[in-house]
Length: 179
Image 1 (tube, rainbow, N blue to C red):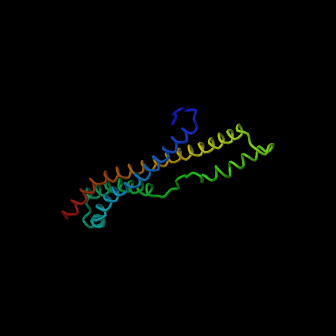
Image 2: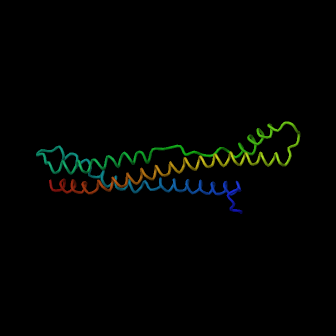
Image 3: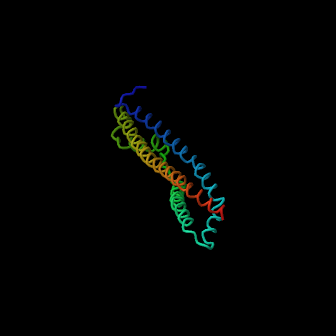
């Protein structure tokens, strides 16, 4: 295969490969949700007990501060996790039939002066169809890249803040076990 950047077939092949890589990356990012869920599961085991201790008498200021220092990053992590898990619609390409049947027939209909199309006209129609397909493919790749980057950022922020909340949580757990 020629790697000439004047060759539309090369553009199409390269963009189709890139689209497949981006879709695989999207699936890989979504598959990492178990890391966050493990942290949330470990925290939720004693979360109710820690919250109950917060409202018992006597009031302990340091325990309250530990709960606040735990709660803020945990809530931020939870918000990012929800945004990470929120379903989105991934742009997909139109059916190939749209190009090789419907669009081709529409473009051929513009050349109604002759019953048979010349080779130059067929080549021009082919070039226009490839151009339209390539534009659609590039738009899908651009949109999917933005979506993958956004989901990856949500995942990293959710995991980062969940890890930040672990240390104050351990302090809260120690307070709970002492009382």
